[in-house]
Length: 568
Image: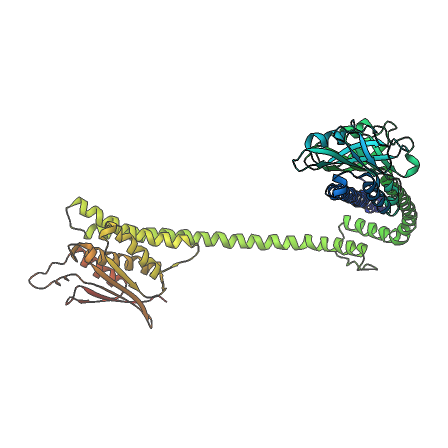
């Protein structure tokens, strides 16, 4: 993008303010979620209260009917005494609309408010009690007395043989919910319903909405949602007028039944939540737009005040540098501002160019030195190769055996000891010394591989890390290789019985290596046996090459002490 500083300045303002819109949108979504959850929690509490009230009323009526069923006057159906009891109950408990006793056919015998002979046999709760001989709850009905909305309850009257001699029936006055709900704070735009088992609206709060809803089936969309086998739940419905309504419900079940006898439900329009959130969003959006307009207007003036003169000065300095003038030091008016830093950067760029030229010259000198060093290393490598080939030639000349297998094994062992030194040396590039202690350990492992795991001798190494030069390490390795190999060959018939001790130590400017084993030892050459073996000749030759001294003992096995002056 090719933007001027002025346009970039405006773009920065817009980009800076854009996250505020995102935060505002996220905030409004969170606000909507919070309001919705709080509204649902508030309505769930109302649902809990009404459910508990209805359960309590049902339990209270069941206990009242169960108590009446055990009263002698009720079981014997003494009209006058029973009417006094019923009247007393209705006076004390306004929730109960009426109490009756019917015969086994459902005809009223005694009632606090109905006439004797009134046929209640078609009421579902009467029929259910006649069939089950248990407490039953009926659906919504309108009272035949005054049209009040009631729910019926029935309880069996049994004789000593367990046969039904009558039915105690009571009805709950749903109008009492008006008084109950008037004591509860109901959110605005919220409607409370009581719905019976057949989807008939028993009760609706607020009262002004009851005239057209009580006694009628509820909306089929709502009724379909209530058919799911959930005791409690919530759902959303779009009404025919395209309003989004939120519903919550609690189903109440009669004892030993699978159908709810009543459902407590609430509803409220979702725009009750969205309207409050949307109004806040519009107000805050307008405020941010006003801030943007003011910010862009202020940016115009600030640009001229803060950047105009400095930008002109900086452009002049760039033109000077384009002409190749790197020598004039730059002194910005405000060295700690961004433009001052740009001016310094331009000057430092010129200095960097000069420094890079000097660096290239230094690198050229360094490369020349590296070439000389590599040339020296090549000469040293050729020298080492020449020495190693000369050593191998000497080994071949000294070896007098005619047994090809023996010759092969001895030469392989000696060449491995030489190769191990070079491997250790090249693992640490640039170093010209090796750790003698570590090298001897590797040599012991190499020689031990000549025997099977169950026949390996016991080799004990004592000492500490000691660095020696390559020119000393190769002869020392060959000497130790010969000593260990001879012990394996001649020390014991069974190699596992062989015990070898090795120790290295530094004494002043000398290296002392002591070797011993528990073998039979060997006889040094004499006038009778003047000829020396190849191994002994090689050991003495290499010791002489190192300007060292050898001392032998043969009383208890073989013991050899090698003293070599260390290279400075």
